[in-house]
Image (cartoon, rainbow, N blue to C red):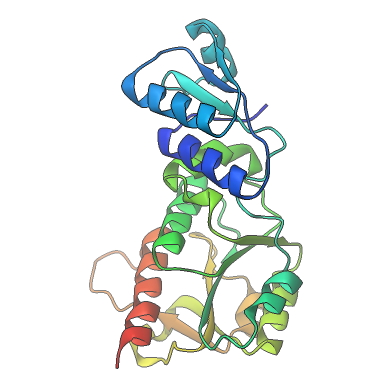
Length: 246
């Protein structure tokens, strides 16, 4: 069974699941601290069952708890049921849209941090390969401060095919690469998709070949690359900066 134990993650899961008409719970509580009591009141408000359990039992079910845990077994807590067709069909005549494509980001801490930035900068969709991080849902939710419950996501078995669909819909594809051109020299307005690769291998060869352009973040440090979650936030900011520039 999967449990969320972070306070923010539990709060946002309860709120988002209600919006999406899903059911989560029960909420298990062993210690009634101030924050735990707030979550219990929220669960009651949203008609989610609350069970009082012993500390030993909660530690057995959700070892990394802070006195409270929410069962999310079988619950889609990250909007991953969205398909490419649904996303593209919903764009209508929108001029600006921002999509993030993650090529094998396997560290759940990085994944969660990226989702947090996606929420802050209004990323319209995050696309990943059929994810191997499902078992790390709690880590992702904690690191994302609960925003994993809100950021629209789509999973696919074929990222190249997803890129082709985006291109057909008028997107320009920019791959993050330290050998690329400075990102601020590119026009990132309109429909844009950013591709981020894994820390070790970067973007896969086939996906690189699909990119219209490769871009880099100019730096002057001794290490040749930024953490992928930090890079994502900087790239999102540059997109926002250009779109707000008069």
